[in-house]
Image (cartoon, rainbow, N blue to C red; front, side, top):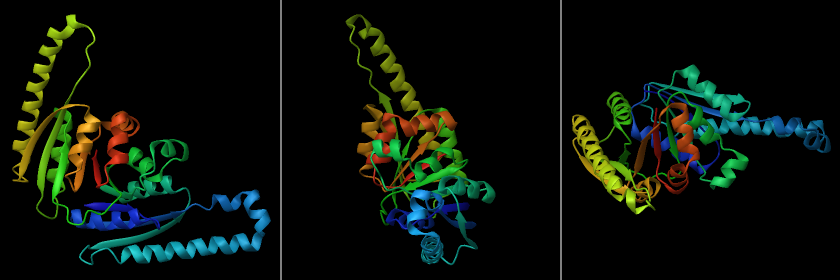
Length: 285
């Protein structure tokens, strides 16, 4: 596996390095740190400090970035054949995305500080922009759960199942895991009593589809991961996933391309998964 890890001085970033090295076997790993020096070019900042002071501050940030790469590099196992440390000056999100493309990465890992949804909307987030636009699977890490054994895999449909199974068969976990397969049949409030019969029929068909989905997915996954259990829940998907994630060390979700992932990040499910779930989240593309 070719992996890129975006690093900064946050605890979540250090956790991302440790978790991604623990989860998979890596053919190559690139640590990238980007420093955004644009604020130093703003006259409101640069002129009061003076050119000399602003320059000294820039030099200090560059030196700090190099120290960061040394510290995060010390967390990487020496068993990984190829380890690269990349330092760039520029807007962090585009720099990381370019590094992913250049490395032909299979996976990118980023730390997430877990700011609230409103803060993400107003301030933006490097980690969430990377997850949204990365051309590969992304691992979002907030806390380090230590040993990762209990994995929650959420599945929405047969296309989603195939994507998840294909990626997991190509990129195996480095240690044994217990896989819990979850699909959620959403409940829809019906205000018109004349619709109850049709709604009951629709629910029965959805239950049948969900059972077939989890049975087929579980059967395929057991060829790779023998310890697979199945769950079918009814209710609000965000609530069900968040509740189930409380017993997991890692949550895996699938994306549906650009639109699907954008909906995932901006919708109510994202608010639960990305902002309430504290364990690492693997978004498979």
